Image (cartoon, rainbow, N blue to C red; front, side):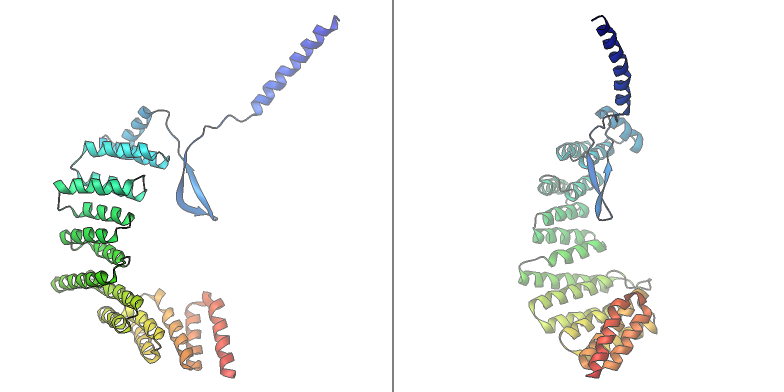
Length: 355
């Protein structure tokens, strides 16, 4: 009985160091941190970057002030972006609203906020941007950038006609802004009312033709605005007519684009000719396109080999197998990394010749 206390003491003395040693081996608890998904994808898996949140709002303000200066609206917008990254949409909206109150008439601040609300798809963000933009435009009606932000918000809600109207108004205030015309063409492709879309295509093309007539000669060696945009408008309308099954209107618009920039759009018209089984016309376009590339050097080399591939496919359809093989081999000499596709084609053509 007298040995029992001594045994307990020995056990305690050995247990305490063991417990301390096991505790030392344990990893310290990791604080839960919000994560956001970056755009990069690594080996098929999304890449996540951790956010290191400061301990309190005062520390966050201190860091932001040090990083971007003392402009209060900038700090509030930066803090809103932090909240967006952390998944705290309501907090982000609160900071955006506060930034607007600081500089209610500053168009640059408004555009930064509106574009981020729309881009990050905050809760009811698109509706709010439309309301905010309308309020701002009531005071500053000629601001094309704010009209563009409202157009993006409307398109986010599926109102493509309303979005088109806003961008059209923006382009009247800033007609040299190429992106407005490009966005208008994108919205037109999404119209459900094809009759109305056709009218707007014509109106847009008329406006671009007027701009082109008034534009001074370009000093650039490549097609510049508005010439390149007018050609693109013809191409987009050609695809619109193709959807409606209007072959003549489709080919007419392709031809208008070719007249403006032949080196860009000859191959596209050749493909349209091929689809309509107009093989001699398609070959003629590709002959001319290859001439412009090889003799006049009017197209980037990276687009050049595709002419031979398309012409070879058309030669096969015409039964001109020797010409097809020659074009396939020329394409292969220019793009040897495509041999897995082209060599079976050559073998298939040779088999057709032997039948």
